[in-house]
Amino acid sequence: MPKPSPIAEAAELLRQAHETHAPCLPVRNLLPPDDVAAAYAVQEANTERRLRSGRRLIGRKIGLTSKAVQAQFGVDRPDYGMLFDDMDVPLGEEIDLRRVLQPRVEAEIAFVFGRDLDQALPTTADILRATDYVVAAVEIVGSRIANWDIRIVDTLADNASSGLFMVGHQIRRLADIDVVDCTMSLDRGGRLVSSGTGRACLGSPVSAVVWLARAMVGLGRPLRAGDVVLSGALGPMVPVAAGDVFEARIGGLGALRVAFAAGAQT
Image (cartoon, rainbow, N blue to C red; front, side, top):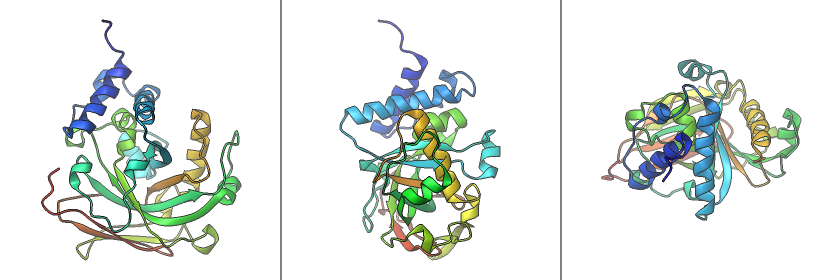
């Protein structure tokens, strides 16, 4: 039997880590150094696998929207991951930590689209016109790589370190809030653990979504009406422990409470 390609081997390692809830070694050692295209090919292999298994693609997440984090990874652009139907956590549902490996949380603005974005080069005006509404969101990020020992190819291959997400129910039109200067605070047990503003996300969450929409057209998976886009963290992400309760508050979008089950093991 022929030896699997490095891309297939990396995809299988990440799939097994997800299914067995046992982190794996970094996949960067299987791929050409700093090869972004190869890393995204690994992500795409597992995307196709999940679609074949019956999962539904419902949106995207944007990562690396902070200039400081980009510098840390030695890149000059954001990254993206896929959101599937089984990643959505209904508001008010307690989260079992066994659903996410090495979880961390971050607060951001989620965009929900009312129109397809399949133009060859989506513009800022296209994004503004296509956005149906925005809501506060908390992303529960996770890494299938042991001890978060990741570099750029690891996180890209690992679906941009995606896990779960929860969105708030205070729907707002873009015209009704200031996504650039809105403030974000994230409390754990009533104590502030992260803060920031819309500017932390590529200068504006809208700019991050413009980048994503263009990348998705190039990938052949354009954003569609109904898609959810997590536009990027507005402040540093925070590790999670069993029993933690977080409240994210974003100016103009209200508050969002996320609770993790006590006694669950990661």
